[in-house]
Length: 427
Ligand code: GLU
Image (cartoon, rainbow, N blue to C red):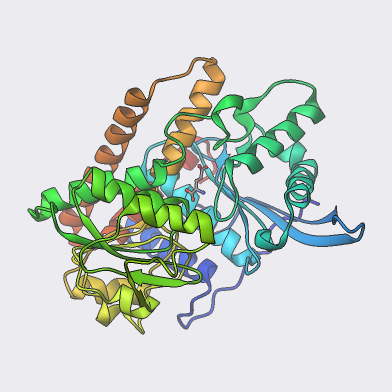
């Protein structure tokens, strides 16, 4: 089960393989920081990888086999942390990249955690609830020896839910015959979840947009926003952009298509429409809009909130938004980063913008460990403090070195992980 990484090769040309992108980003930060060779080797590869096959019984009695992964990129700063993604297009290199970005993300937020990520190649939209439960439990049976509150703590990601986390925790606790809620975060409240975890990714992102508007001297009240992706992050961002920033969201989309309304979309009604029909498409008071048209809208804030490689060298010249707030992981390629930077766009990079999720996951763990639970106001205040502090650190680094925010975030994170590795005598 435990296969150590065989140092993935890096091509010299640029491509959109997320792992190659993550490694180029890390190499560049290490180069600028002049880190020693051992530190560079450790930062650009996973410490441990688990590749396994899950044999799951389907409702019709047949057996289906699903490839699954857990990548533990680096745990110098603390136990591994990061979600598990269920997606039909998942690849091991995507999971590797996401684990690398988790390592950088926890470091940018200065959380005492490392970075990890899991994935199962499956299509949860075509699994029944009992099939999904058997798959979730099988994942934990395969990984039970290599996860734990002080080893590696999974959480939700694309297409995994609090219910999935509850099954996973229950399986782990059954194996070890004890209650151990801190093994996984993003759980339902009734089994040790944290208040505020459901909208934490979007809320943290909204706090960073508020901070960006302050440094850019922009007033966002009444201004427009567009949201690409309408899952956990995107749909909560719709509500919070309206409630906390007073913005008008004029376009949103999901994997089925997009909707546009010049006067603004009502989040309650759009969310209700999506709950009923499974998509935002066909929402009555709107016109259809393509993904490329949505990305090119002349809005104040654009929220890429779905998957990787949405803003690339092919469309970066067409992005008109003033602020790009990355609620997704890896939505912008390095080539697009340079184009956006040259065009004066203010990018709030993923490892900062969407870090509210893992930050409240950390709070959830702290609450589980002390078996004492905080109220909503405490969660929101502590999340705001963390996000605001991290935003200021990234913005100051960018200003001081004259680099864009993503590179600044990578410099900050790589230095922090390096310091921990150095203290441990690894590098
Ligand atoms: N999957 C989320 C992320 O990419 C959350 C991870 C966590 O809460 O551990 O940041």
